Length: 198
Image (cartoon, rainbow, N blue to C red; front, side, top):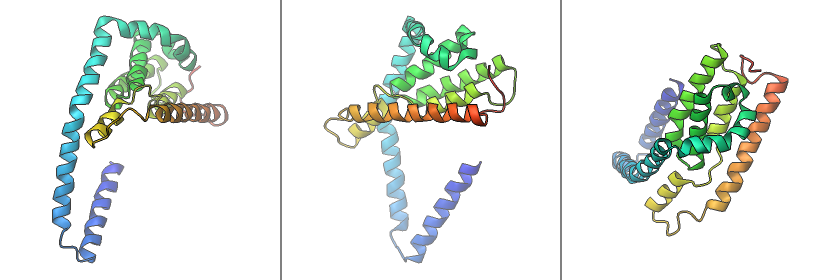
């Protein structure tokens, strides 16, 4: 709800500034921007469908379960409550896998499902430390293959859309590290969530 008001205020302010400056091209610029937004969305759709389909293949072939077994030792230490439930752990691993592939839009539903399962396991309506940590991990995710960003760069004419890989690896590692350190700090000195997970 708050974001809706922010966007409405930004739009109203930009319209007001355009009228104040006497810009006659305000309507044309708005229509051109809307057209570019639609073009961008359509150009990204193919890539998102491809990699989301790849994620579905991983799940149905059983490779996601194998990946869950590989990731479980690390994720089990970060999420000890989720580790006790195999289905929750599988969904959590799916979320991490989608983020590793740079599929934020595919990772979001898995993250929401993981939080719902964690909430059911905790028996609390408040966000636990593990739920908050998952939000941090999902937001500042490590991306091995930034497919969405590469698709965006390709749609805008980049000859080598994946040449950003080293920079993405370094920055995503640092962002996740900083996020986990902040989560550990608030968990220890002030409570990251209202519901404590032991």
